[in-house]
Image (cartoon, rainbow, N blue to C red; front, side):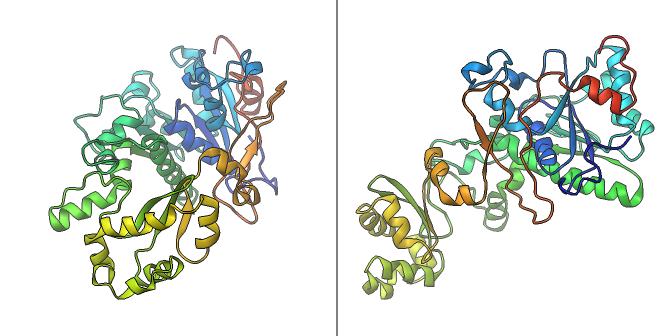
Length: 402
């Protein structure tokens, strides 16, 4: 079988890689979206009722018939959809047929589900020894290290909580989750890296392997500061609000119409900020002479900076500070849409949805290649839209139920 898009000079850097995507919701689909954005042929294998994210809004009024909300389109673009009932033997046989010619399979079922269906990594490896098999779960897989929580289900908030992220976020007395679903997205990004590395190994050695990413593990890794602070100094991190425990100033400060982020941990940056604020007399002040002094006197630093920033709007502060010290406005999405940076770098891509009177858009591809750029080529597929096309390409006879 010739992978779709193979030898296409305008295709992405992963052109020719075939990925079977059995994932749902966010962590797995985000992982495979990254691969699809960069040219991999991602075949989304869905149960007859579809990925549960198809039922999640917001919905465009004229998209109700398709019953695919913005959530689904945001993380399932550039993929093809095939419906297979993996509880039925015919569905399992078709999946095995797809595995013969695939490079990668990704799933985020609970531990043991694929084994109970007779579709374990070991059985699929017999069909395709070069297969890279990736599992994304809350607490990993017994193949790479047992966990007492291996059978627990998990979502983003559980990973953020158990991995330590929430303990260091928000005010000290109230652990706080991130607004973005980083408990899913970070494991998805790490899994995408693992898959690319695994495919590289398979190309060199001719053998695939099993890899897994635990959401708990990924969140601990991204919260690295809590580990070294504890191991070096027995310091248990807690919520610091918008302050930084090790450097100052490094926070957000009130403007007339919102907030401005300013980070000047280096002494020269602090001195440059004082010059901008017309407070050069404070350069010799012992309270602010170096970063440790400023951390110790962080409340005074905040009062000084806020007293100055509150006189200006975010736009005015951007013009004053831009290019002189590390600073930027706290943007909401309306601000981002209007930002020339986003427009120049094509970071919002329109979705071409059939019959839509309004054209929605999604966040575009953040990894930029000069020769093989990733792109948003198509919206999320309709359920089972590519059954006939995929089965024909893979030489699978479409007999019986899916």
